[in-house]
Length: 421
Length: 137
Image (tube, rainbow over all chains, first blue to last red; front, side, top):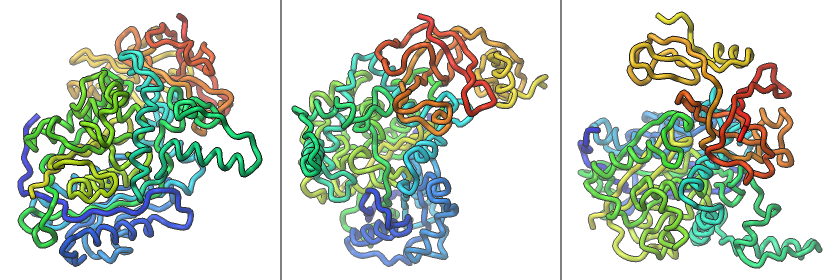
């Protein structure tokens, strides 16, 4: 694997997002307008949209979710960017992480100076079983899906293999959800925005209001073991091990390092970028790790000239609780088989030595699949600039990382970010 | 040139005849399940047909409660979950399949490493047989 360098430096000079959630009255274009406006407000010295040379839109499946194809020019139109090139990038749940990479490539090549990277998805129009079917098309529809696999099912199978090998339990997985809900409660853009204890209190209040028996959960773990409150989706994964069905959009503004000063004195440089592909889950030598993520991580670390211990904050792809544990191992934060111990010991909490998913992650912030990769970059933008409010991680956040996975790892894309002043 | 086109149609025809077909690269010797027309290892197009015996070992599994449409049509549901898993065949390749022979409401009764035997099952709502493996011990 050749250690490549970015030919011309690239920086984030703005980043924003819509709220993530379920919005029956909003269409994708409305969510993208929200993200665009939020991004524009984040540009310290202001943005003239005429400066944008290219628009890349990460989107998994507007075709199946909304019956709308050819979405990129439509998004360009709705925020007033036509006639610039507008192109949709599809790599399942890694779509906008890969769109970010394409933006970097465009600037590094000299083909653009300023690129807008968007991510969009509107999933809530469809009933749950059709969402399940649509997400399953990110697997192999000839050789994986006929087995009866769903996306929760794939990750559940990775979980059983991981638990068997390393001794993790369903309770280890639940700790990821508890942590990410704690973080999401401090994120005003998050879909849930509630700790699990808050969700329990709300359910108790509703039962009382309706004159039903008030559930007698003794604590959060008791709640998470309740088959009625926390339905098994694909054993051992339950509802609170799974990211939700979400609508949302994110927007990241990239500029060449040499002109970034026009937009801000506090840019966030992207110093490492890696991407890799892989075969179906059953064709891989080990279902307890995502090889493409490991490879993308190595590419990004080598390009950046940093090591895992340099990373102060990371947003990783926690589409399911097991996915976060595996991600923290694949990114080199913990040895194989130690990621579950780390979360049990609180090492990945916001105030721990290795903060993971301070935004709430996909689990609590929400997972509008095509918007998630760009959404991760938005959190990094806020954390590195000290603008993350009540969820701000203490200390000097000079190096950070995002890890975004498509499918079960048929695609993975990793970026490393640096703040220099 | 190969004597067969190693397509999904061919694979499904074999399942319907209760056979498990693979293809082996005549250049590098790699064996593939499902059969492939081009060897991803050495890029040779010179592949020969090879049937697999159907014995294997379970390497990952899940009991699926929230089922996709195809399995809902086959009669599965929250109240009637099923297992999906990954099986490594004795000959080496691994594949995704439904796992049968154990009650999916009791997932603790199935163990990774279990010996399994191929089964070609009929599902309501489909005219074709589906690939499954039965847990034998």
